[in-house]
Length: 467
Ligand code: F6P
Image 1 (tube, helix red, strand yellow):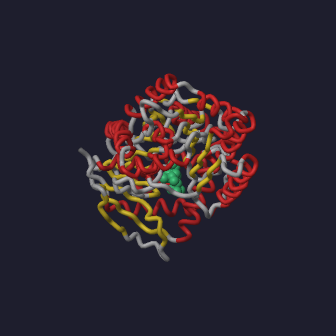
Image 2 (tube, protein in one colour):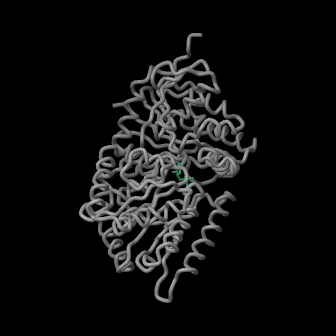
Image 3 (cartoon, protein in one colour):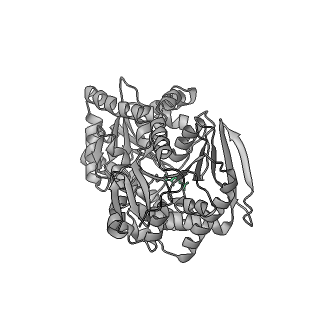
């Protein structure tokens, strides 16, 4: 088996005990890596006065982790700047929030170059290199410039936007051209893959020479859809852990005679929390008889706090949650709990298990693994109902969820009512189909299908086309 070198901006390996509260990408990558004798390379999350490329190497839960510190200007221009003020909003259809600044672009290029120089000595002949997400699109180009001939794959965890949105990015062509330095480019869904193909064909004069093979810029690249999954078996184990059970009991005790509705998201404007809060408010307004019957818990750990748009959404959510409780609370009851704290994964598993409804309504989302974890945590004999945004990548697989338009508080309110009134037989029927999908299309299937596709791509550098 080839060695696997995984690269992502954030390197946050879990310990395997459930105590961490890392995001979906980190969980999926460590689960993917444990199987290979590989290395995970990326940013340490720390800064240093001058970039030295000094690697910190450690072995965590069977995974070799190599991290590097960045300069403050790197973090400002590459991470806060180009990644999170330019690409993130644009890829989530918020062109109105996207900032275009040459310094951001330069910082992005510089960090990708630095990562390539630091990573280069770790790559041995025959290694498969798998690069993740929008922070690192130019990395293959930089590695190729340093003579790396290995197979290099790229996986985009976030949506690829429609061509009309993507072309609002100054420098969109160079970014796409950089993707042609990979052997394989993977997307979460066919819809994102098609949006990419459409761009290449209409904007870069490219052609689809065979299914999944795109030619442009004098090169060809394999593309495909590889929906990411969770480690369903591991999560099922976590649900039975003492901490999860305690959390479930705690939630049950604090919601006696009420149904719990739960949302868990990084505090991000793409997650649709304003509309979701208003959807809950709608439920309370339209159904007075349900008011004392429900409790909504929204967990939203703060994220990317140096970026203004995140400070603004936080202030709006604070105000909205306060308004809802002010309007509907009674002396002995409040309908809404809004918590900006991070919880361990085992605790979240217990919270999901106690909930009657999982409310996952991002305005745009590459996949959304909270939706899958919610399903995995349910009691098969009395499962909760998943309400899911039609604009989350997960909606392509989880058809038996109640799919909603996340922009519409009315639709969210109606779906909540439907979920709260749903008979046990229907809940079981829907949950079974959802769980089957989550078990079948889990993180191992995702990893194996991507790695198999990458291993099969043409030798070495993507073929330069005979012109
Ligand atoms: O899924 C997109 C993503 O940016 C991941 O790359 C990352 O792990 C997660 O969101 C959390 O974001 P950040 O690393 O900026 O805290």
